Image 1 (cartoon, rainbow, N blue to C red):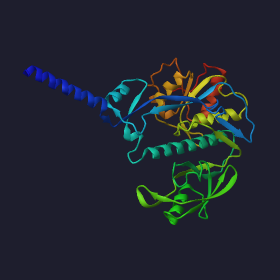
Image 2: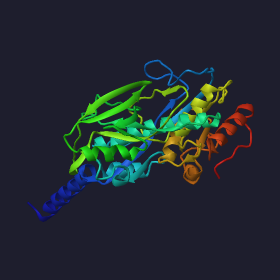
Image 3: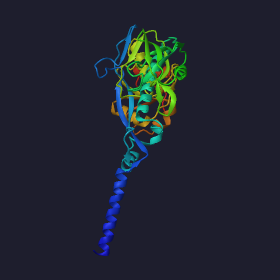
Image 4: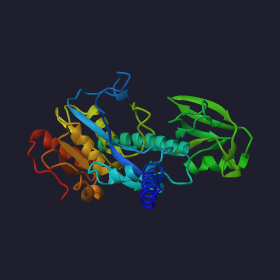
Length: 352
């Protein structure tokens, strides 16, 4: 074999090895792409309205009010350099350090539980924001936000159970639940008294040891703050959609359902943003991908948290495709949508 042939083969194998590295060796990043959008004024997969109200009059509405999502690399999947570079140069996608999205000290199940808990909390807070906008005063309560699969509480406690007592102690704050469980300890049955859909229930749950601390008792629930609503409002959304970023859109959907006329007046409106019970709108992640998803769904207006306005302006859409409207509060969003319903050329607070 000649020296030239040997050199050519060496170069070939080196290039092949480089290709293998580029394609198959994982890099510590994830990609974020435009995800599905959902009209919260419409029906869910089972054909029932996404927003359901019992105990108070509701009103028909027209148009669409779409929550927006992003599709993120699954926590169990790793990507190669080629895929990361492809997303980097794609104006509709983004690349983030993996640890920023999936903390290394959290398992995929932990991530899913946290996301589910955030969604439950987001929905309840959105209802509270809508009712606050309508003039209601809402007492706070402690409730179950999520239950881990196969955990001690699985099948015994449900999301939105109002926690009244644990081992005879009246519960007034979320952190009390863990403190009471630690007093009883691992392996000792704990008695929960909860209110579930107006029924009072007593259940026994035996705590197990936490994976990171054999002396810490856990039952596999995430507990947080809920609200004592004057009537029932349920948001029936696909379980695969998690996180808190749909709060503003949920709140507007509930408000539209409970008020005469149509807030969106036949238009297609989209948006994003966390919300608190006072109606203040907070920032979220993936704003550019969500705007692209909204434009693809035909939305004419996108409601943007003020802190995300600068990033929103860099979304891969043109001003003619979708109007970016700044929404610092629930009240501001309602006012903007009412003005837009009357005149699509209305001077609305814009990201600039």
